Image 1 (cartoon, rainbow, N blue to C red):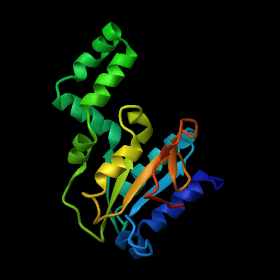
Image 2 (image 1 turned 180 degrees about the vertical axis):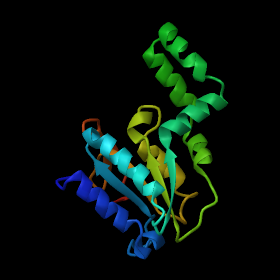
Image 3 (image 1 turned 180 degrees about the horizontal axis):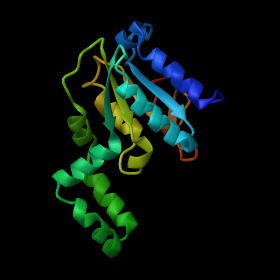
Length: 186
């Protein structure tokens, strides 16, 4: 991540509009999953640029953003537990709350909320909010669960951490989690 974040984001915007990226060419039949890794301190710059890219009317592709934190909140609302989370944490503790949420909110529920009418060759599924949803959902588990449902469009994960080709490491400080089916984009 040695390059300047703004330069890397400019390169990203150019890359996601290429036909090779949108068609998944050059991947040797691998899944079309890409990681844009950045330092957590750059979150505001990355978020601001993502908003600019999404609103760019001259963009050749269509960006479909899935913010994982927003999806998590929607799932909590659907389960009618959102208003009870604070009280549960006060009464039973943080560890209990975390175990309850992790056992009741599944990868499948996230994937279901993320599904939409895809346009192959034109759409990019952009995943944001990875750091915000931690520790309730882990990106390596989500990407494994998503693969059968999003094979026709490229998936781009905005990842506040590092990916070395075989493991993701959130915030570049947590224990690495194995994941090898993605590529670093820039």
